[in-house]
Figure 1: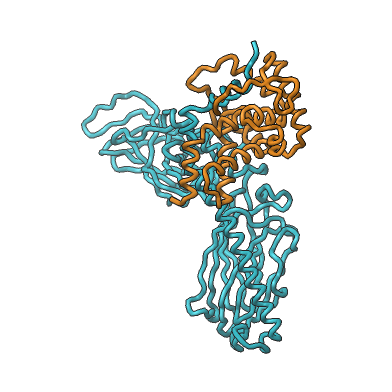
Figure 2: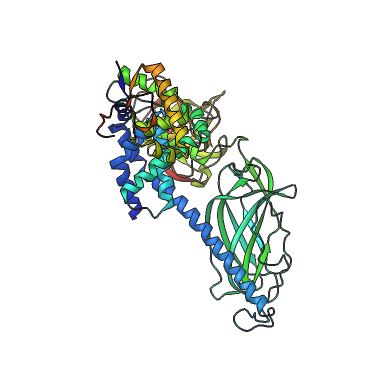
Length: 181
Length: 420
């Protein structure tokens, strides 16, 4: 087995579900998330010359994000026919979904792709506004607007959310209680 | 109550962090490796073709700087007996593309002769052989070749270029000499992308294929262009990408892992080993005949027989079907809506032929399914012939027939087939 094949196998085994979780936050569909991650892995490894696991995961996350933002033309086409041959796209996990989680998912679904990406990068990926701006190829001001608008829209759905004053989201307060992804 | 957004997002992400996702992702590694290899191979091939082109340019430049074939020293000086007679555009000629125009067939020797199947299903690759034949009366020194390219032509315009496939093989004559009447062949397997929309494959229609390769003959690099070869693309007007089909197949396989069902129900993992069957099918058709577009019937493709000296009286569907399986899951079942049944009355040792219906479409799509047919991805499949019967009486030596009527599916032994 080639070195890159071992690296791919290891990355999928050790970080596969975390990557799917990240993609799931972006797209909101379990099966689509798996597709996104698989596409990103293929793109990343097809480039070659990548060996460090941490760098690989970073590339994959970046590719997931770009694929998500670059549009859904192909995936929309797939989504249009998938029901013909497959089960419902989202299957509940072993745990029953809590109503709070469902509410958050519904609130995320109300956001535009860039709003959603900004929220996920800022509050799930723990990026600073500057890093989010770099990842999305936007100005920091634009990211702040996306965050502000996005969180306001989520609040319309969820009620008030905790957020900090960090990162320019002046109208929300973030609680930094999460220890890991 | 306020929601902690960070924790809430982590909780949402965690909903997919389970064994189901882990298993499904792990199960896709082999497929991802294949996709990566394919992409790397395509890139490697593209680089290789560029290198051959560069060599050709260097060869011609060397010839020019030397004052032509007769004027310069070194390896670019061709032997007087092997100078090609071919007349065509000067080399290096531009690569064939949607905007390059249709190249004119070259005259003289050598000639490039194309051979390919007369038709191919949309989106599937086609194997084309380009034979470089010495049509002259003296030996040619064939020192190298490359850049075997094909274009699809309609109404004197290039309408399709090579895409996908990319496997190329062929060998030069062992002694480097192409004798009068002899040919050396290059074979390539390729699909065609539409010039109108390069993201799609060539639409169904009537075309001609024109081939071009660069050959190094006696120190000269020459362009050799074939005569057009008629070529038909069949299939649906709408493009279905290979990736789309692969994903649909993967989904079907994933779902089928937990689904048992009678043979041959689409998307199930049937249990076929139930001891000695009372009726069985034998293939008459070869494995290559079993791979044909949906709706194709192979005349007399199978025969029905009883086993262990039994006799059988039954009604049968007029056609048997080739059922395709991947990893033990039914993924291709030809749609059959028989209006008539045929009588079966077999004594021990007798056989009855049945035409065999084939498919290359993913089951559950197309005719008899929902939506447009998705082609099965290229690759290896297991083909099992199946014939639906309504058995009326069946018995063996010394057995009393029970007289009950029941449905029965006679099947063949599995054979491995390859979809291009």
